[in-house]
Structure formats: structure tokens, C-alpha cells
Image (cartoon, rainbow, N blue to C red; front, side, top):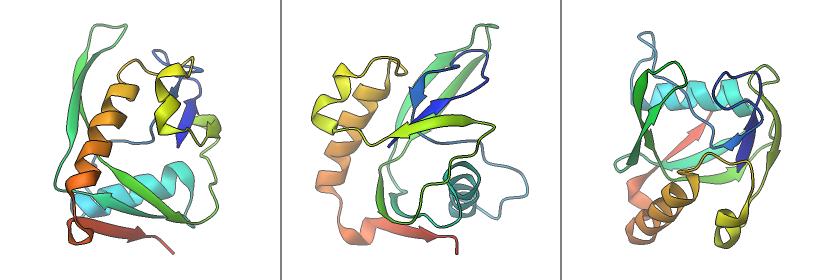
Length: 134
């Protein structure tokens, strides 16, 4: 699933994967992911996440700040997508075989998705954590 960012200085109107930052008040990594899922795509969504492995990319903002962002494989299981209207204004389910043809997408996303799909192929069900917010 790709979500179109809204109101951002660097990526306004551009599709990306959902995500966010870990807060000091989060009880841990999984709690942080659960909070971000609830904040960004709604409390009804259940995902399973390959938490042990990630692929990482470095971004440099228009203001010159840099940040490293990890990407994790996630599998949508169920639930109604309810985008956070202050962060996103659209979403789409993208065919992973055609991800490289999508316009208006953060440039590293196709590569990140391909790497995450390879990780998913070698992972077992025991490697995934299910996150259900309800």
C-alpha cells in the first residue's frame, strides 16, 4: 500500500510507504509500530510485520537535514484503511511487479520494496509479529 503525502515541505503529493518515528513514550519497538499504524491508517487495520530485518535508506531534506530511515516488510491482514487526513490524502494498492512504473513516488521505494520482498521470501511465520490495535 502506498499513501500520498499531504502538506509536507519535501514530499507533498508524493506516494510513500506509511511510517513514523519512535516516541520516548512508546513502550518499545512493536508499541511504536502499533501506534504509527493506528495514527496513519486507522485502528481497525491488522498487519504482520517482519520486525527483525529492515532495509535502510538515507534522506537529505530540502533544508539540508539528513536522516536514515529503516523500512520493514509488512503484510496487510485485514481492516478498513482510514487515512490520517492531516498526513495523507490518497492511497493505492500497488502491484509489486509494476512498482517501478508508478509516477510521483519517493525514489527509493521500488528498491526498498524489492529488498523487502526478498526478505519476506526467506522469513518464516515465526519471524513475523502481528499488530492488531482493536
